[in-house]
Amino acid sequence: MADAGMLRFHVPEPEVRPGGTPDFSNVTIPKAGSVPRPEIDVDPRTIRDMAFSIIRVLNRAGEAVGPWAGLLSDDELLEGLRHMMTLRSFDARMQMAQRQGKTSFYMQHLGEEAVSCAFRKALAPGDMNFPTYRQAGLLIADGYPMVTMMNQIYSNEADPLKGRQLPIMYSSKEHGFFSISGNLATQYIQAVGWAMASAISNDSKIAAAWIGDGSTAESDFHAALVFASTYKAPVVLNVVNNQWAISTFQGIARGGSGTFAARGLGFGIPSLRVDGNDYLAVHAVAKWAATRARKNLGPTLVEYVTYRVGAHSSSDDPSAYRPKAESDAWPLGDPIVRLKNHLIQRGVWSDERHTQAEAEILETVIAAQREAERHGTLHAGGKPSTRDMFEGVYAEMPPHLRRQRQQAGV
Image 1 (tube, rainbow, N blue to C red):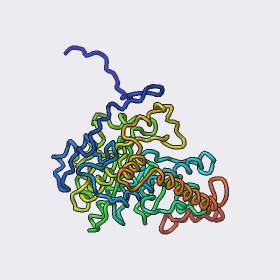
Image 2 (cartoon, helix red, strand yellow):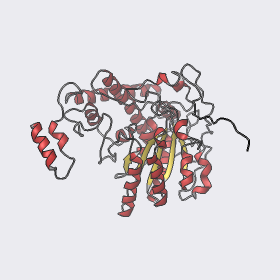
Image 3 (tube, rainbow, N blue to C red):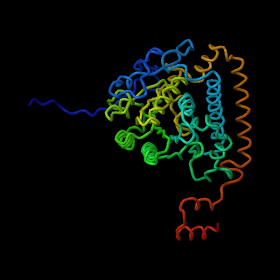
Image 4 (tube, one colour):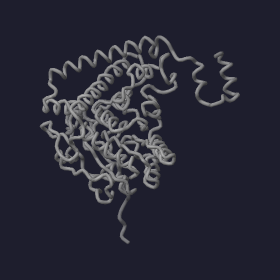
């Protein structure tokens, strides 16, 4: 056998580095309305190609076209627009608060607002999301109080989690928002297990798992797909592909599968890709997947193709690993602008009303911030009691914790 020479280690490289010209020529974008909408009970083997396309509803003219259109009324879309605008305004104020030292840490949703805001409207009361740290839109679209969210970010005396979680790691059983885990990917297997338990108990509630493109490289992601496919768990498996993990591009985690949705094909799970910056498309696909779960047809894997416009977190500087102008070149645009243009095209919105709504929403967010700051911030005002760290962990506090609490004088 001839000597093939020295082996070479392969490390995937992004298309362009800082200082270069942004290039998204590798992102194939189908025409809006061109991807078919299969029947709910479709055989997953017959729609394998959908793991490599992108479902889109809004075209460049702002029109809703194709078989995935028409599920939402104008009023519902106007509500969705306000949810996204609220999340963006909330983000800006909390990012500023972090820079002012009022909280230690923050993570923005800039450019990804449609994914969580639209998805939440496809669920029913009692359904449970197992989110990452970039799905606060699930709470905002469900009416969770912004003041409570801010109290948790500030870890103040009114923080519902008593300062025991990192900022932005919310938790609300009432609003179907499972406690966020900082150890990413754990929520995937938790969601599948919760969904299996719901089926075992003959309940009617489904689960939604959330993960980012980078965390799909973790073993929990693959273990979740094994159990979800084997037991036909009533769960929607969401992958938010915003092109970048903490500082590495999506190709590191994606490997040779071509798309993240394609990962589901080997498990026999119907797998779709959707334009994550198209509110109508996200909602339509979420509704389709949720209906499958409720009809005992098993899991669906959905990849949301979007772009993280901002930094990974307040501790990150994206200029170190990607061109500064890359977000401007993203071909799927801004989710808020796209829905706004659609509503203007339908004659139910205008630039003037949009500007007015921006001002009204900002006023509401600032008022909520003032109320939250009356309860304290990271370095000023009221704090949770030291006693709180001992509470709510065990049904019956073990002796060693009782001793520690006594030693702390609380």
